Image (cartoon, rainbow, N blue to C red):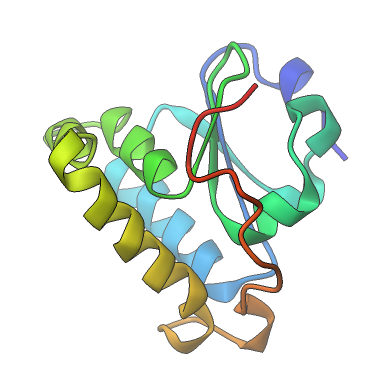
Length: 141
């Protein structure tokens, strides 16, 4: 396991399910096309305790961890990825954070997350294995 607090000298950490083909493909696309300012790591190779998150949570949603340790999950993590990307993507991230759209974006994220095993690149290993951890996409840490 790595220690994200020690291994990243600056920038955020994107934590995803490395066993999920859909998630791995999506992160690869994001890294190639959006080029966010972050390090990406599968949760399976990350010291979750150092981040203050549970295995249950990372199986349920992608995480964006700021350099100071604030953790955003799900749709808010996607917005943070966009906000920290190059080109025009930060505008899309800002739109996703608008109060009137947040509920719809959270719903869309949940729909994708629970069906990721049915999406391109998905396999049975991609199926969300746990119920909502109650995080609600709110920052913690």
